Image 1 (spheres, chains in turn cyan, green):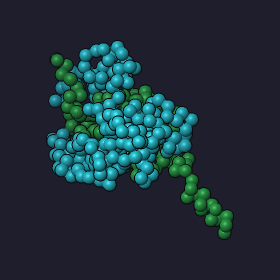
Image 2 (cartoon, rainbow over the protein chains, first blue to last red):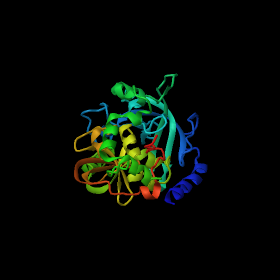
Image 3 (tube, helix red, strand yellow):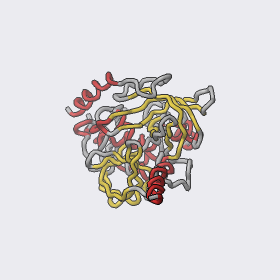
Image 4 (tube, one colour):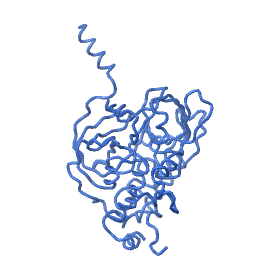
Length: 188
Length: 147
């Protein structure tokens, strides 16, 4: 029953998606998310740990989350997602631009009720002044370089990622020790 | 008076970061995109056992991990116990969906809360058993074992 309640609480919100203060000129594709706003703006790509805490010893190092310090108002937006299907973040796509001034196009998520503000989904990025946009879709290629054996297998990356596979084998799909068959039956 | 003005100016001009507020927080490690975007439904469906497999995928995929506190506040985790690999890092991956008691420092910036975890005081394991309410989220997370 709860699954249907969750679905129906999400559905009416789709109609509420609207333009925001940075929507002018945006060509971002809608994801039909509840509180999305198309948003195109100029920003500096910053290392989140450095920007937030001042711990800059490994600034822009691999594996650290990156943010967008918006030029117009100095607000720090947090890219949670890149432009690929599902389950992939934006740090890999932003990494080549760390410390640089860029222009981005994508979707801002603003939902006061759950505390979501300045959450961003990056769809396109380019160095400021550059005419050519780059689609933020580099995560799976980077993953395939890191895990060539897994990438050679049939199926989506998340089904073959060796770290995920190892954890699923240890604790199951629910994380609480059930076998594959048990987890399947418990969630039907 | 001049010194007071200078001190006030220094405070205004100080960088956004400071030492942070020292805290101990108990909550569940969640993937923030599913939680904030609503892409998979309401917030209660994107946590716990129902969402465990997706939480692994999102953490491995580099989506920021957050600590969903008991009061509903989400803290964006920037580091855990000296591990600064906040995008796809192994430490946070192994804690996906776990309820933990974390000691660290909180920083507020532009409406979001950020957490540097100095120490996981206690790992309570996965305690939010909600798959009987929501099934698996997303529905394809658990493939049919019979193919």
